[in-house]
Length: 232
Image (cartoon, rainbow, N blue to C red; front, side, top):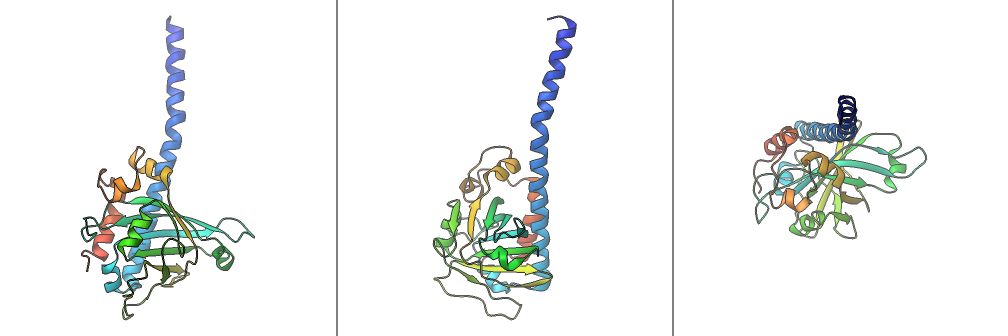
């Protein structure tokens, strides 16, 4: 290989690396933005005391979906991307786990929301609900029971052992319990790969602790531990 051919080879290799790297950087930026936006939602909840402290302290997992919007004009479908964290330990009563990325399809709720950007928060209250969510895919109502959660600092926390999940929404500055009907929840495998730099299962992230929490998740986890440092 002469000098000219060597230069051409190096240029081709460089362009190939750039072509591969740019989508990865873009994906990482989107995941980082999702974590930052989810952190902002948590801060708002704490500041407004939107969820009763006792209810939050009893939760085994939390899902935060920031800025969910309708997919398209005239379509009764909304699709959101959010973050899941669960308490560690066999009894799920330890510190909050590294985050896993999840998607949310709220089906016909999109027709009700119009063009409003809505934040959703889902608290997983039972071990049964946690097992379902960590299976990677579920439908509320069919695979796990879910109701609008109590809201406000003075609200009475939910104690029904048959209710797996409590759901909340925030739109136009108002935060309250909200029904998510038959919404579908699924692990966002592409986003998890972008965040952790490799194919990784949700159970490996949340339950096994097989991968350390990335730096991008530091703010989100700090806010979670501040909001509910100990399981009740």
